[in-house]
Image (cartoon, rainbow over all chains, first blue to last red; front, side, top):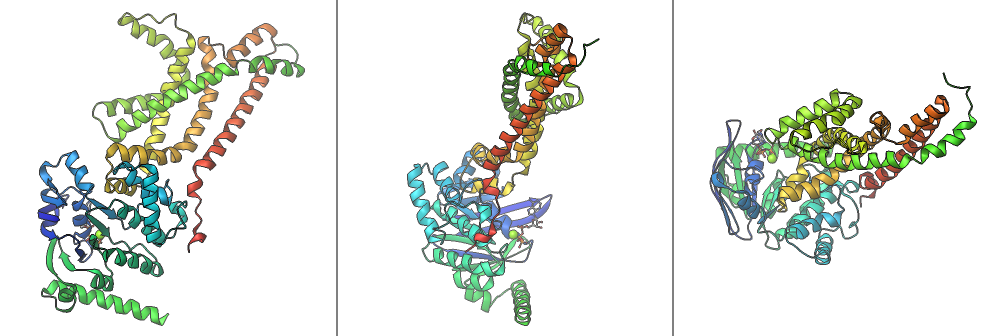
Length: 256
Length: 235
Ligand SMILES: Nc1ncnc2c1ncn2[C@@H]1O[C@H](COP(=O)(O)OP(=O)(O)OP(=O)(O)O)[C@@H](O)[C@H]1O
Ligand SMILES: [Mg+2]
């Protein structure tokens, strides 16, 4: 389904991914945790070649690409296997909510306009934006924009949806609405890879959790294994620090 | 010397001169359209740093920006036939209007190229990545996502540039084009009422510029309707 072999990536001679091997099965929900700068975003972006790996093999669905020899055509067909939900939503600013969702269907899936419209309306209904079709992204809250982003990704009916910190740009009170949409689609058996700092969400939604640090996958396992019985010292330290930050911010919030 | 100032002549001159507004607008329209094509092509060559052509475009733009348009006009008027004569094409009898259009197209092209380049760079790269992520190729993401937004961003500057260009067309008479200005010159020769002629021309140019500004503003409001930030509608 998803298969990564020995993925390496450097920026300015600094290795950021140091040989990532990974298999993800159909319908699996995998979250990636790790400290800032550990390479989570870079790994996710290598999956659709928004970042071209220096070395290694990327396979999504039945499209396999050898990084060093990747042609434009191969990259295009690899990208058509996945969809991505971005930290900063990256909606098409000159298109309405409905057009944002339709765009991929029309351009890459060659849907007829009426068909694309029908499909997109259903999806917008599903993410709770049935009444916002003709709004432009700038007229929506962050949480609404991100739900459009999710609908746009779902519309492509991809083999996998990649999420890069989908809620970290949101005001705290808007995080919930986006996470609950993601949880709902996780239940439908769509394969997802999610980079997140929302620990309780990761615990709840994941089939498997990966912990990354300094360009390698340090540890992986079920949420229970990673959160309750981490084997690696680095994982433990990271989780301790996060839960400490969490309780501090929790207390601060209580105090206010 | 001119004759005594007679403002009532302005009323006579304006209709005579306005009759030639069509030529002025023709020069403007042709040179703006050609300039758009040149400008977008040059901006793309610059943005994608196409070897050799990129350097050529840089030189072209800096030359246009660094020399007066009147001189560019004479260079095209005398230079182009001379160059083409080398390859045995004789255009010395071509209507002067075409030399004007070529010059202004080249001039507009250089200015538009810089405006478009800035505007294309101003479109958030995240949207290009989003376009790739939904499976678009380079040209689909450029023409469907980036360019429409770049045109909106560029529009106010393009509009200013077009208005500047409209006024610059008043130099066309120097190579013998019979536009409003050219007709004005013949009127002066015939009547010796230079001030009245220039006042009439000022009135016409000013009115046309105001009209253009109005149209551009209406259009700008229309294309920018999606940018009316109205966050109160969250629900
Ligand atoms: N385009 C780039 N050019 C240069 N360096 C980059 C680029 N993208 C990422 N890096 C570097 O690669 C390293 C890993 O970055 P990455 O964004 O993958 O980390 P991350 O785990 O997603 O961190 P965060 O949790 O802060 O998002 C960082 O040191 C970053 O500075
Ligand atoms: Mg990141």
